[in-house]
Amino acid sequence: MKIFSIIGARPQFIKSALLSQAIREFHKEFLLHTGQHYDFNMSGLFFKELGIPEPDINLNVGSGYHGEQTAQMIIGIERYLLKEKPDLVLIYGDTNSTLAGAIASAKLMIPVAHVEAGLRSYNRKMPEEINRIVADCFSTFCFCPCENAARNLEKEGIKEGIYIVGDVMFDLLKKWEEGKFSYRLDNKWAEEYWLMTFHRAENTVDPEPIKMIFNAIYKAKIDVYFPAHPRTRKFLNDFSILIPSNLHLIDPLGYPETMSRLKDSKGLITDSGGLQKEAYWLSKPCITLREQTEWIETVEEKANKVVGLDADLLFNEMTTDWFNKKANRNLYGDGESCKKIVEIINHGN
Ligand code: UD1
Image 1 (cartoon, protein in one colour):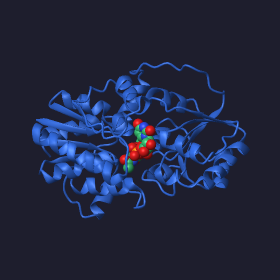
Image 2 (cartoon, rainbow, N blue to C red):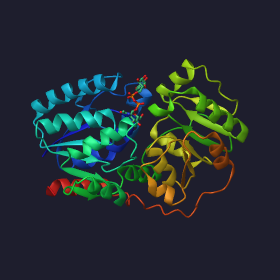
Image 3 (spheres, rainbow, N blue to C red):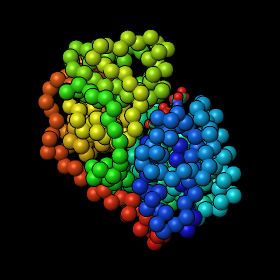
Image 4 (cartoon, protein in one colour):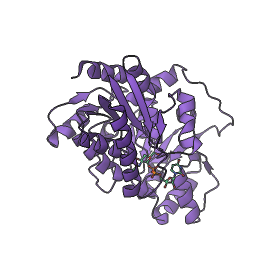
């Protein structure tokens, strides 16, 4: 079979790393990078560290308004779909690259497989929510990481092609735990610290709540390391937001270093989707700077607290002991998701 995989943004490089390898054992893969992320530490670094094959084509679409960016991706993807004539298109997650891949393929009536299907925040103000709904709706194979995701699809009337396979990110985390990726920690961090990331569109608009968040971090009197997405750094610069002395603003990190720093931390403060699960797998408390999460199981397990941009709640969760250390680690499969996905693709059902 010829499988046409579409990636473009940082989380998709992580999700595709092992699945690409597993697919190539049985099939021919054509790998298209949309170019949504392009800085070395947002893209090239992940290919290098995780041994992801060189993309067959990079559309170099870059940044832009949603319509403009997605439209350019659709044009480029369609051109290569027509040329390559794949049997199946593989899309990941919920970015604009996912959306473009789903639309271009569905219009050409090429079957689509969506990895990380069925997640819902039920907040349509998030661009990712719109991308997920469209991607699932056009997919022949919906590969869900958990039961809840499958239930979400059923509620939307999707009856066929739903497979609960676990989370491909757990496969990768286990490989990292086995020491499969080499990396160097160049500098020493404080003995005790929290790791923080935020980059969501909705969290990088209004400077006022972020100033309050930074104030809460200052009051918590513990070091916080903050690898900042380029969008976040621009936001902080544009609004001249002051960074407290215990908050260390640094460049984005690669995958193995992020896992290592997270493992050594007291916990995570984030608005990322993937990191919420990685904290849970590494038994670290996660405080989520969003109004809701798709990963509701982590909240039910008392491994994750969703606080929005409420600085008082953040301070409270940073300074009290609420984390369930015995949280079950197997909410999102057993680390064999790539194998399961390939088996399903091989059998066509
Ligand atoms: C995208 C995804 C989001 C995902 C995130 C992971 C969408 C709608 N959102 O958000 O779901 O969690 O990726 O990082 O697809 N930029 C750079 N260099 C880069 C990439 C981006 O400077 O290599 C800057 C540009 O100013 C750009 C901004 O970051 O405008 C936002 O990038 P974009 O890809 O539009 O969205 P993300 O915030 O990265």
